[in-house]
Amino acid sequence: MLVQTLEAGDMQLAVSTAGDPRRPALILLHGWPHSRKIYDGVLDELGTRYFTLAFDLPEIGESRGTPPSAEKKVLADIVISAAEALGAKSIVVAGFDVGGMIAFAAARHHGGRIVGPVPMNTVIPGLHPWTQAVANPGIWHFAFHAVPELPELLVTGHQRAYFDFFFDLLAGRPEALTNEMRETLTQAYARPEALKAGFDWYRAFKQDAEANAPARIEVPILYIRGDADFGSIDDYLEGLRMSGAKNLQGHMIANCGEFLPIEAPAEFVKALVEFAPR
Image 1 (tube, rainbow, N blue to C red):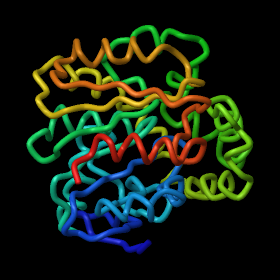
Image 2: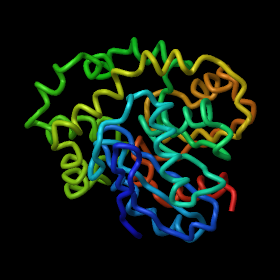
Image 3: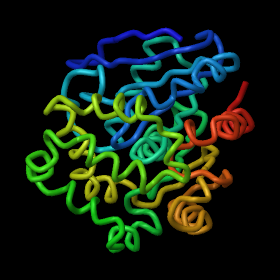
């Protein structure tokens, strides 16, 4: 695994890479409140087959610089452009949580630059069952995180306790997220700029939903979900079909919640390998 920082406009993006740049590329994206470190345990294995790149999203972890927007289509362009600058080709974009929203945006808005997205364990803004999800009191944090300034005020100095609530809630096996990993992810949001960047992803959901209006999507899509996460995978597949996805696969991973690369690394790698070109 090689760790490097590359210039992306006014930003500097931290990326961990593995594998030969001449191979097809696989971009791995984290969500909230995570960093690229969540993929450390699978990066080298995927690197035996792909040019694999795990990014810290702008301002998170070791990345610096505010992106032009927190809209997912903008973030997709940023990471795809950064990967292309490193020589990536035949790109698959995979991500969970907010990273999955970005992976879908890559297909919806930049489909000509990738060969497929893999959104995982996420509800995509504007796509069924988005309306039900945002109305669910169990997903209260979507509305809270979208409030200007207040989440930063209340969470600053309490990141670890606040994040632990979500780690335990969303994991099928919370013990898989070790204290060391939890502390690493918490430190990725220690800076005020990082904490704000993460909440800004939620503040852009309205624009994301509007941007995700139905349109024909030709690239193949693989949607992965852990069976311990909320909701039925069939609802999410229906939403993707209604959005215009013409080539869609679904894959369930047993005994797993949101944190696929940590909770079920072997199954996670297998699902990607079966989908992504080699």
